[in-house]
Length: 75
Image 1 (cartoon, helix red, strand yellow):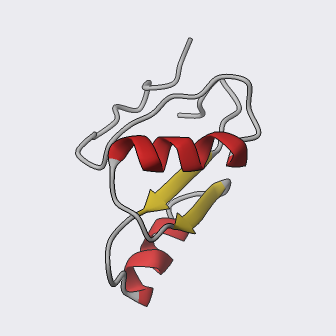
Image 2 (cartoon, one colour):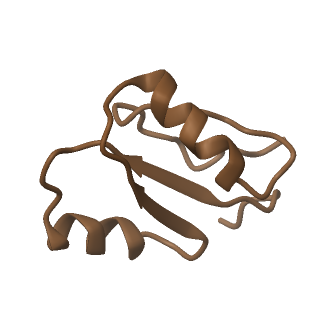
């Protein structure tokens, strides 16, 4: 099922030593996935890092424990 809205996904990775396999899996999920690695940890730090990188007008922040349903972005 195709999502009814256009969106991009920004992954802000704060892990100490991300493997190339992990990065590759993230980037192969779908098109419009952008991976960024930052050296400081913290939810607000990651969110603040993502804001200037996002191209859209609406931002939705999710942590890594979210499992989105197929209609997660439908409006």
